[in-house]
Length: 149
Figure (cartoon, helix red, strand yellow):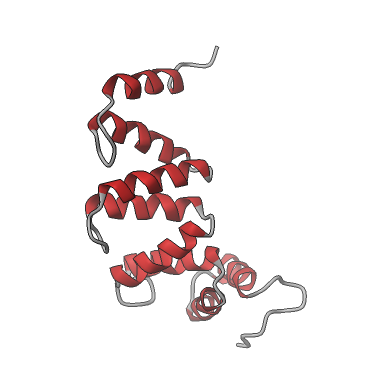
């Protein structure tokens, strides 16, 4: 298996995704995705971070996963920001830091992760990483969850 980007592909990440669709996740997909992550492709960093989290094709390593999630989140991968926020809120793979968690939920939401919005409201209601604002949180919740008319 060659590890040079194909001329008709945009790079390792695209090759990995194409191969995974055709043959499932195998060692070649792993090598291509790792090559893309080594090239700092944030999508690949997020994918490989989840592999380290769940031990897919490699030994579980929460600290390595957290580092990769951080880079992917700061590069604009919304789901990476959300996942890292959960880790900071729970103290998994990182030192527990609820303010960092709240900030990352905000980042996730601004990058388009809808679940980040729900987490922001929950944090505001309970005072997780921000001051407690239950009335404000309830007003936002009520506005966001109104049935469409």
